[in-house]
Length: 168
Image (cartoon, rainbow, N blue to C red; front, side, top):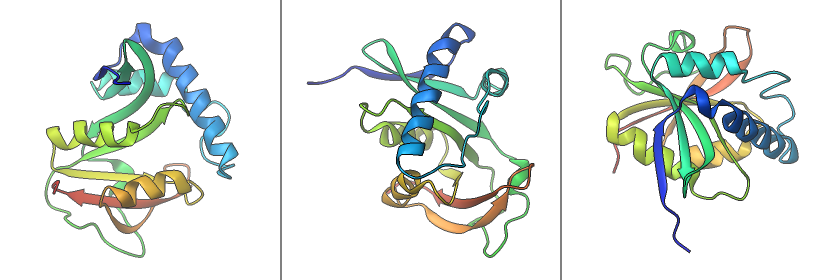
């Protein structure tokens, strides 16, 4: 069965649906053994609103229903200024960063759809994930990203950082 999938900028009127998607994504994380990423209250409506204010919050719709969310934000990303135990593939060119990828468990190929969209807008993409987020690490590797090292969030939490320049 073919689905009519679109990606569009998120609107404040999407917030209730976005938060349902976030809750579903947290449940997927917990069920797969990722117990510490996205603790209580994160991502909050304020974080999603901030993405939207930067024109960087996006929803994925299947047949008109919001089934996913992600942030696609231009550089610089402050937490990417310093990378430990490695280095970026390229540290001179502008890039975009992808954050807060979330979807319902029954929806498939979300990561692929997001990456197709992102690489159509910028050939230089960076992404990071929690060490326990094996699902995201699998998707990142499958898409050909290179592991670059460790970055630390503003609160001190460690994340595995990846970069890909250009699509094959």
